[in-house]
Image (cartoon, rainbow, N blue to C red):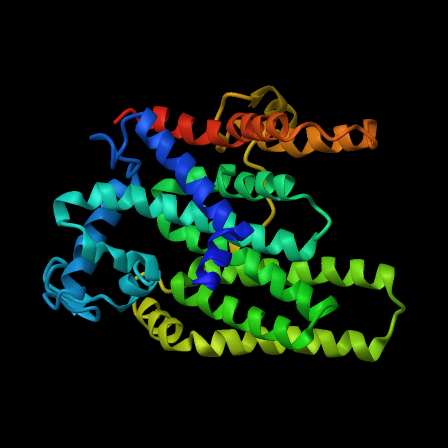
Length: 354
């Protein structure tokens, strides 16, 4: 019982609860499910994902197959579909909803994934930057959860599993480099395996980012410690081993999916996609920047950049500023999160106009 109370009072649990509550309040304010008739399941979610969740519900009820189904036109292989869209364990909560309630399920699923993103970021911040205050950790974690990418991809909810797992991958790399190599190796391996299993597409992106983060952590570590080639190679070997072991653990879902995709009509990769190119003139893009826009191929939102910038200016200009009262501090924190983070969610809800 004491362990349960300790967990519920922990920073990740509080961050999760705060993020979930705020998301539900936004949904309630704008009449979105489960409080209204509207849903954030727009665009691809409305076209594909609700039907896929209905298919998953039938699979879990034993009424359909995860490998081959007659529900797709004249029948077809569903391995690739299941591996790409439906492997997140949170999707299995669909068993508690009727097919007529799938829009409600979708909104709750989004709230859960955003809250998990905040919670795992809180775990990372607590261990990676232990000197950061609890209030600032909460602010940063919730800003991460409600960032532009997460809100913009609310209609592609399958890509959000990689967001909450990315924080654990970053933490695993930090531990592997600077703290406890055994714990870091284990956490990195499991996080990469889960990321690949839940969605192999974002899993591969997370792996590519992990290589960049490894360089960052190594540079920071070598800045504070003496350089030893043998130790550096050992850490690099541990990272490579963890990545390959994570891939091996996820091979049961990744390899069948790869084979299924290779047999499809679009089985070749267009390498021209990797050539560097500009979508628009960078100078004309300056005029497209704004506070009340959603970032896309032509517009750039400045809210996400202004939040950390304002905190950096405050820290530089007033390093010895007195600590505000608890009430004032929490009210300021709530206002900042609402202004810089939740505006994206409210703009998204208004943008759908469902």
